[in-house]
Image (cartoon, rainbow, N blue to C red):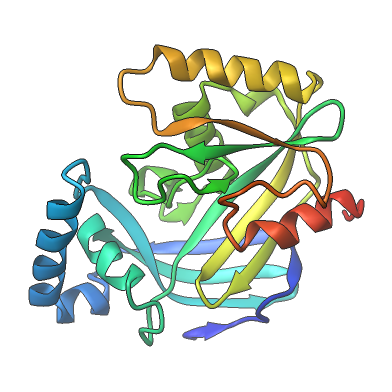
Length: 238
C-alpha cells in the first residue's frame, strides 16, 4: 500500500482505519546505530527529551473518503532521527488536531514551551499518536485529541460539540487529521482557563494560549501546516 494520497489539499474524511502493526517498523529495525548516535546529540542539546513511545506510519492511503493505514510503535529517538530526514521512503508521520473553536468563532491554539522540541511554535494542542490511543489495534483519533488537549491545556473537550466529520491535510512533512471542537465560551474566556492551568504546572508543555481571530491574524511562530487550516475555517468550510 505504501503512501497514496493527495498532497497539499484538505480532504474530507468519514473514517480513519489506521491500525497498529505489532511488528517493528523497518526504519527503526534498519537504523539502530544511527538512531542511537542521533539521540546522543539530541539529548546533549536538550536534556529534557524523553525516549518514550510514539507511532510511525509505514503505509497510508486515501480512498472513498477514508484514510487507511498501518503504523508501528517506535521509540521517540527513532522518530527524532526520522524527523531530521522526512524524505525516508516507507516512513511518514500522522497526528491529530482538535481545532478548538470558541463561541465567538475565534480559534484557540497554543505556543509550545521553551524546553520542548517545537519550542515557540504555534499550533492546536496536539501530540503524536501513542499505543494508548489504539482500541483493538485501531486508532481512536478523538481519544488522542481529547487526551492531548487535556494534558497540555487542562481543558476537557469531552462535552464540546464535535464537527460532523474529520478532515486531513497531507504534506511532505506529514499528515494532520483534524476536526472542529466547538465551545460556547469566548476565546478570551478559554484563554484565561488555559493560562490558569499553565500557571499550576511545574513544567508545562506549553507557554500559553494563542487566539486567532481571522485568516489574516497569523501569529509569529505559526507552524506551516496551520495556515491552510486557519484559512479553511474562516472561509466557513465544512
